[in-house]
Length: 377
Image 1 (spheres, rainbow, N blue to C red):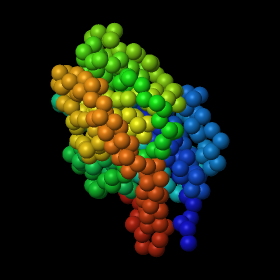
Image 2 (cartoon, rainbow, N blue to C red; image 1 turned 30 degrees about the horizontal axis):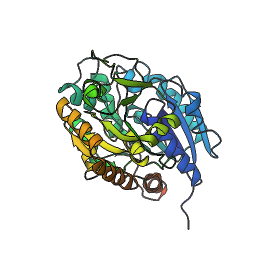
Image 3 (spheres, rainbow, N blue to C red; image 1 turned 180 degrees about the horizontal axis):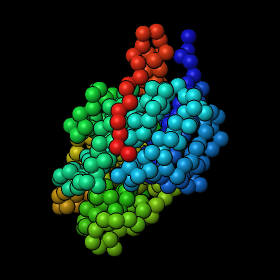
């Protein structure tokens, strides 16, 4: 007997990989007969992003102007978000609330709430700056992340490495589950061309795109970088040796990946890295920073470098450009490893989790809803 279909309220945002993750999972869930209301926070999705969910049976997109928690660290918009979400739950009566953020778990949910820890400012700041973010601006943010983890029925991390980071920073009362992110190939790789591709927000110190800009002139092949250029903290460096592609719609980015021979990311912070998975699925050889999350996912299927060693980055890029056999070996290895992180596997893992906690709530003698945890408003 098949498990019953579920009504799922899922939060999301249209910034970066969070949108790719949420829309892929929502489509897969709807393909299994579940219903998903996808509620966006932050900037509204662009028209090309809206096409990711257009025409999907059982999927409803609700766009709000509610602030993302990491751009509202002092919680000025938090009360309004809680009020809005409470009203939405009354209307939809979901079986599961899937939160791709932390603090909204503090709402007085009637349905069991799952928090997915994709990233957090505390861990980003430590990776980029080596210490904790300044108070008092970020004290409220950290308190609400901690409160959200405590209030949720359960929480999930995309890698064991990031689960350890969350446990170290916030000491949640329950053990998080690890569910690797997953995607399906967007199409067959095209004939590979002699260029290196990278992707990331220029202003994001965690992506460390400036490291590639600093070594590009020494690398035999051209380097193309996709991602927005605007924003703070972009740094002072000569970017004249890089072809900046700007922020691309996802189909265009994947088309570049399908032609690129090498995909490089010297990120100092990356809890999972969906663009790396997309590049591997597209048949790129991978040059990755030697950080715990990438080692967990790609050890044996990529060339690893110290992200803060510019000489090592330049040498690794040149080596892979000049060694055709190694490049082809890594292309095959990355594509084979990428199949481990399938959309079907991710969807099955989340469905299993949803049914477990929803069934426990419905069943006689099941665990009660966690007591509300006080958040900072």
